[in-house]
Length: 554
Image 1: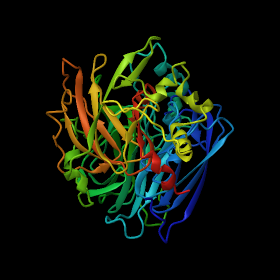
Image 2: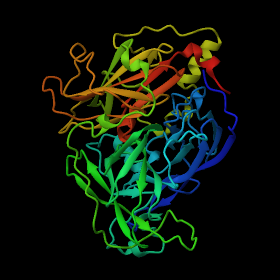
Image 3: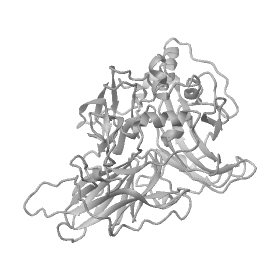
Image 4: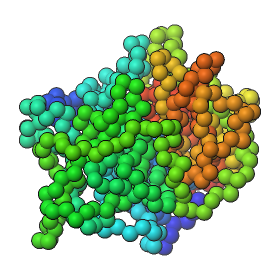
């Protein structure tokens, strides 16, 4: 059951407009047509408190359909506000509006982003849920955000057409890595000195203070390392869940991942600058620091009471970069991170079953590339057979899966479908789950083309635990009871790392997660590399549809 609001809960209302314009966030000198929120990139940060009811009215002022997803918010009692076209809602057509209403029953660091086409390149912004009074065990003086994202020197709509069309061959790397929405692509270009160039992001801090730094993985393709010269970070939160303090000199930020770290500043004089840097990880072409994903930690003298500024444009040479170690092995430091909450009993029980999801990229009859999931195109892909871009798919689709299931159950006509051996049903193209069922899901990588790739998987409607990871192909007999994570943390993005290739099957690494089906609704589970999701790397969980109506908050 969804929780009732607490005594201090409030109704928070926000108005967002999806707007359209020309953006040049890396001072390249050429602007490209892209969408943004309220004319801002990133969009405005929305801040609420755990227990609040939230209403976000989204007006579409662009000339293409859109939708908004509140990434990591589990939408308990409000599945219709999850923002996934064709699954939980129809598109918001140009000139139309949609109000998302939900109760935040969790705290931590989240973000909102478009869930249509590759609009999430620029339609994204922080969504911060403060802990209730007394709910944060770690002390700090102030907080600030580092919001990572990527930028291509090509209009997003053009790049989407490439991903979906017959000329697709590989995912092109972004031209710039942005911190808080800006950087300098190349400091030698004339545009880098133009008044419109915002320069490199900076975080202004005082000496001998502790800051909560919220790091948001709004990157949509690359997995990035992040570090700050001469400053360690203490991880205290991952994907909204508090963990035991863990000191590190860098973070590994996959698309969709979020962290809170405590940053303790030193006794440095005013105007001291320390570079913040990003690093390519698991990149086959070359690893190492990115070409321009930089910013600065800047020490300020606050004795005169000057206001603390969180954005700046220091135009200085890049010197003294932090040393971010290259990936040493699969799983980064995930196994070392420990939950702050008591151990979940379901970790010590057997799951009811295991769903093995094997994704494979295949060329289609029209020479386009699509991911099949257990040798099937997803329902979203089936509705894209005409070649329409995903961004337009649901504008003329009046009955997303969620609403169709609700309609049938209201009429007391629950669907009857055959469930296949792998747990799939074909009427809606979903994997049905029973209420409160504990299920393991295996995400199986498979090599396509020259390399095996890393894939960060995001579970809508749920957080989950990583139970195990392994090389090659998952063996349902040998690996059934394998546990490689003794004390996993609760999160909503987990990575299927690449491994050596099983030459018989082309399997190249797997990750097994465990979750409880305690949230009636219809939930997407997908790779958070946007181009891969567009090409079909997505499944749908149909969870206790007979309970959806009675579980609704509104």
